[in-house]
Image (cartoon, rainbow, N blue to C red; front, side):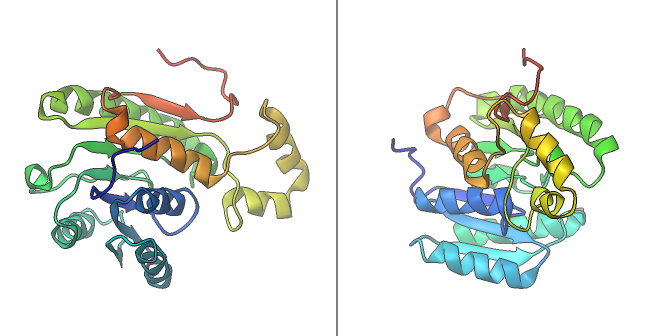
Length: 226
C-alpha cells in the first residue's frame, strides 16, 4: 500500500533507538524526509547517516527534550532544514509546540508513543498518559478545521536489545517470563510493529482518524476504548 508519504517532512523525538528509531526508519523507507533528536550525539549522528542511506534528506541533533526552550529552538531549525514540517512524533512523551507552528504546514501529530514498560516512574505513568490522551482529543477538535490531526499511540510491552525488557530478561528472568505469559499472543511487540502502526496512522491514508488513542499491545490490556 502506498501511504502517500513521499516528500513529507517528519520530526521524530527520541529517534535513535527502539521504537523511535523504527518509526524514523519507516518514514524514510516510505520516502519521507526525517529529522530526529535524542540525548546521545553519537547515536544521533549514526542514525542520521542510516536514514540518509535510504535516499531521503535527514538531519538530527542532541537535544534534551526536558529543556523546552532548546526543544522548540531545534524544531524550528529542523523545520528550516527540511523545508517545513508535516508530521511530528513526540516519541519520548514530550509535547512540542512553539512559535511558527502555522508556518510548518503541520498536518499530523502523535503526542506520545512511549509504553508503560519504558516509563522511568511507573507510579506517575498512568496519570501522565491519561492527560496526554485527553490533551490529544482536545487538540484534535481544536485544529480539525485546519487539517491538523492529533492522535496517541499506546504500545504494550516492546522488546529490543538494549531496551528495558532485554535488561529485565537478563536480570530478572522469572519476572520476564511472567510478563510474556500475560500477553495472549505469548510474546512482546517489536519496535517495527509499533512503528508500522504509527506511520500508517500518521499517513494521508489514515486521513479521517484523529483524536484517538491507538492501542498496539497484542490484547495485553483488558480495557476497551470508547
